[in-house]
Length: 101
Image 1 (spheres, one colour):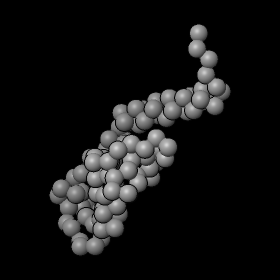
Image 2 (spheres, one colour):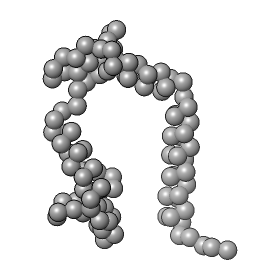
Image 3 (cartoon, helix red, strand yellow):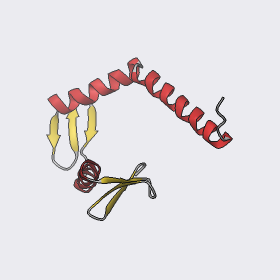
């Protein structure tokens, strides 16, 4: 028999609940339809520079350049970096990307 601390047990329970919710939402017809509409809007829609895409009264905003740069830099840090267990995140060229950033 293995004994784990109560805090760890509760965190495992929370994680399992979130995973179940995620998988239930993944198969939810409403979520699937929203994703399909978003993709169709981007693929067939009319692009307005700086605003986003519009198609059949659906609007998908454009991602800002600053947000996109941060995302690309984070991907590079994780891909090329090493795991730092003391900070619980990835490091590369003195840059840090935490797990929940």
